[in-house]
Length: 225
Image 1: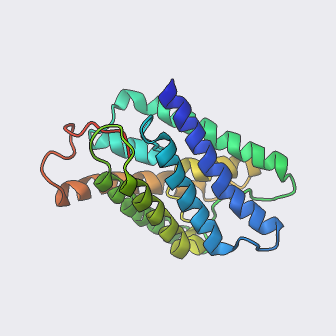
Image 2: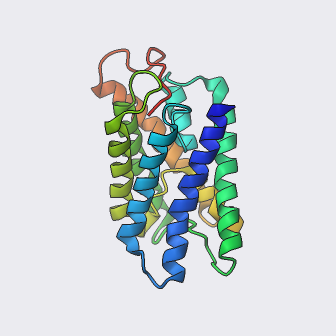
């Protein structure tokens, strides 16, 4: 239960701060700016890794949880529970933002700026890079690593910085699902549900290809970032 509560709180904080930055930027006339939004996503993930990394692993993302399981680092029987509480945390955050800003139309929902296929490919590549970073810095037991939080938060901020204006740089099905459903903007939602999972799973064989033998496939049992 401690792990599940940690995932709920961590995912809630991610969605509340990240999409909240988008909403507040809109209602304040651009006071935060695109760079500020990208940094908010990176910093909140960094903070949640340091807060909950030694408890639940601070996955905060169903794609990350599934990829950890595929890599043999996380038990498959625990995936459904993690995904359920991640969804609950995300929807709670989006509903709270809707209550606070009822006039806001999209609540930070991700929508392609161009072709859906373009955003799909971008999301696959972005998530693969993110997950490859996560797999590379997550070693050992459930412990907080100084470099893990910095590396993962920096990658998220970087990818949101350059790809956000086109695809939204979601890299997280719940980050897109919750605001889309609560706001009613579910068009092209399939892009943000499928692409991050595909990208995260793609990172597993890539990590096996560049890392030492036995890092994935059941020998590394760490769930911590």
